[in-house]
Amino acid sequence: MMRTYKYRIFPTTGQQQQLARYFGCARSVYNMALEIRNRAHKSCLKFLSYENLANELPLLKELHTFYKDCPSQVLQQAIKNQTTSFDNFFKRRAQYPNFKKKSNRQSIQFPQGVSVNVDDGTILFPKLKIISCTFHRPFSGKIKTVTLSKNPSGSYYASILVENQDQIPAKRPARPETTIGIDVGIKSLAKLSNGETVDNPKWLTSNLATLRRLQRSVSRKVKGRNNRKKARLLVAKCHERIAAQRSDFLHKQSYHLIKDYDTICIENLNISGMVQNRSLSGSISDAGWGTLERFLTYKAEWSGKNILYAARFAPTSKQCYDCGTINKELQLSDRYWTCSSCGIRHDRDENAAKNIKFYGLRSQPVIANVSGFAMR
Image 1 (cartoon, rainbow, N blue to C red):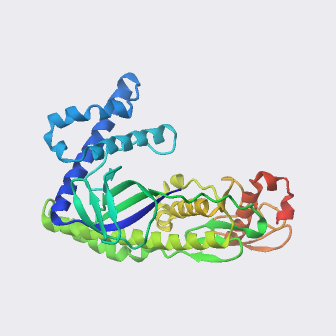
Image 2: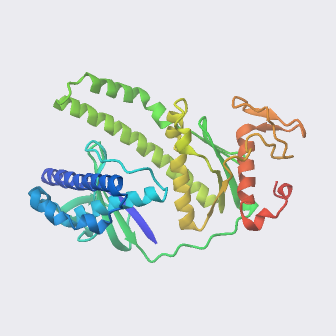
Image 3: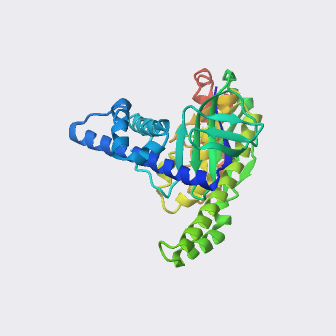
């Protein structure tokens, strides 16, 4: 099984300057590879392979000698990553690759030559020598790659990808009694089919006053001056703190859901399309629906649990869970509604969560033949 462990590292001032050069070389090679592929694709519809571009690195080093200071494997890995981004685009797993910017997160990869000493709290990188590291949790397995990154806030991290001997457990059977349905929302992060509610902390909203003050401070500074750089650094740190709070909260919630239930049913939402709505994009992004789904997916894979999806256009909110009647007059503002057939009063979100559980279980071949009302 492949697992990644991320640790905070503390390079010296000289190592930070050296890393800045490495980041620039890797970013430059990535952007040049993207530009060459763009031209080749437009001119003759030919896709250049990794080998075609990697063979040009010796000539590039002769033309620009500063590339020689950067480890060769870092430059080669930048081309590999660029090739992977194109592969993901052609397989419709990602959008068309963009050019990398200096102001965004910077990273380089070392596929070999890295030595980790957990007892001393250090990592040895090629040409960078020893860098101090905080190992807040142990890891075991064979190291495959180490990604060294720098956030816009100025903090450095090392992500260690290891291959251990653990086997992915077999999936547990999907049974109604060990299944939970989840309906995500904005006012509350999620409503569960058992009636429980997961509150939405709204980390961005709670820190918005501080963020606005810091951004106003940036706008008052003169462009190109050190004071503006310092002010932008404070904004980046504020964004990093908000993201860390959101990630920590979603990690805890996904852990408890995976721990307590064998099967989790969620709705197949078009989140990327929903965030195009300017009125809801900020709230949806702040809630972290996509991040929660991603955390649940890989944790379920590690634990032998199931993630089932309700159909995207299933009437989960409008359909009465008890009798199956569809309320065509239901509006988005109606948080409670009464079924015209059976007379039961529904909480909109809880009813949707129950229907998501129902449609999720119906997607399983073994359970699909079971009567709908038998599962209700």
